[in-house]
Length: 131
Image 1 (cartoon, rainbow, N blue to C red):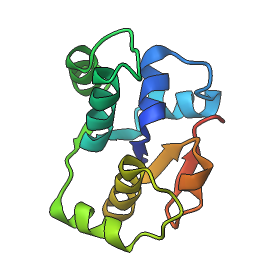
Image 2: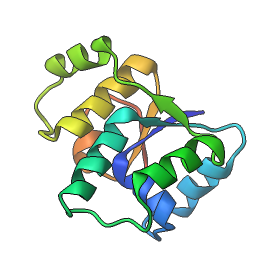
Image 3: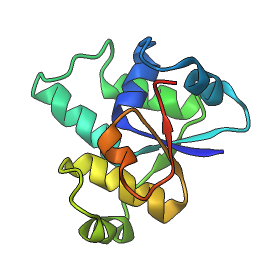
Image 4: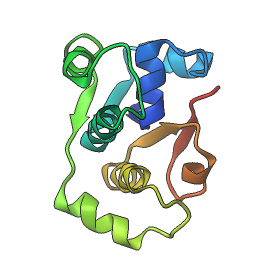
């Protein structure tokens, strides 16, 4: 299964946060699961860390390579197609990073793993990360 991880899901996974549900943890450990992380997620975390609005045990320069090389996560760049698709999304959610993740999940046929009910209101396949 191809899963696009919402930013908070990546953070929960890295920080071993108990809010990441057991079903989701099992999916992420499953060798048939292909987890994807968007460049938008790394961008969002980098901005929030720089503004001191987010504290992580390690900076992105440490955990991003680990995601790619140790955890088998695939990098999802932001394309022009993704950027243009954001324009046609209904304004159910105003966070630009989340809107990009929705557009990417739709455009790349990925299931978005999130605990955000505003994202789940969109026409996009989701999995509740808290389960």
